[in-house]
Length: 458
Image (cartoon, rainbow, N blue to C red):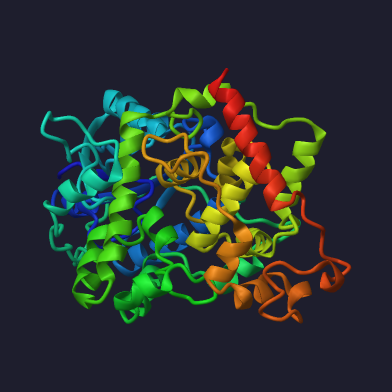
């Protein structure tokens, strides 16, 4: 009898186009294992919204495995210890898994490889991060040349179908009960909006893809308008690996119109992994030294402003709508993410890392690479970023991208204002329950520019 093979699952919770499962299935009995490892990431353990999503995604994957006569084994602890223990219990001599590029997972892969024979496969990105290099053989740091070079290697390989069958071991190792992990909020249960909006799991991912396929050709015209559902809503499904980027690419690449803009967003996802592969501390350390001398606001005033931003109480309707959408659904429209991030960094002069950490805890698509790259882009501190002195005007952005209906949905106390007034409610028509602006646009802008000028002079 062949020894069973362990499949170590992390952010790759699918059966279709899953190379680790496919290879393990070709070798004999398969033991699919998910390890809830909060020790290895330490302060980068999953946030509350991601844990809600994880619960339902694991539930969905286990149901899909049981349809094939298999099951998902759940264990909690340090990855290398848990996998070595399961190997001893079952006689397994090998582990198959997909590469992950967050610094803690790269460390975990090294530790697992010391304990058991580990086989890593590619499958979470269009091409393996680090594989796209310039003429000198070095990875790119700037997106545009990276995308051009990546595009030359596309399309990705055709997706592989899910295995027809999975051979199971003679005896299953013990498994934790998913409910005992307490991934879901209870007191209070704040996840009602997420339940209404999302269907985590592989089936939900393909439903989203099917819906987006019909709209993909109009992506460029619709994606910046928060009042229109013009984005794909695939980001959390891609983050948790419930669908592969190759599956998405092949489903929409022939849509015509402006679909190339969307494909570029898939490329940006690859780019973010390319950055953290080179700069593992990108989520906490600015890439540009100039920012070491920038004095962010601290103290009670800054703390109060940060709480107001988190709660959607800044007095800027487009910012508040985005922050309330985030809290209610675990997701925020991409254009509004940029506006809200710029407002925190420039208007409030609060360290971008405060915003990055808030998004880490509240986004269902909280991806280390994408989150860090996007926040450093907004701050101007990244390897490829807008300049700090480019300061978004949230009021004009709101009007330009016709956010009136979006604001009415998420800031209902403003719903009776006209389209003309809702972006910047005049003093006489600002509802009593809606807060005054934390800072006027001109004052916030001048304060940010002054702080930047002082940092340049150290």
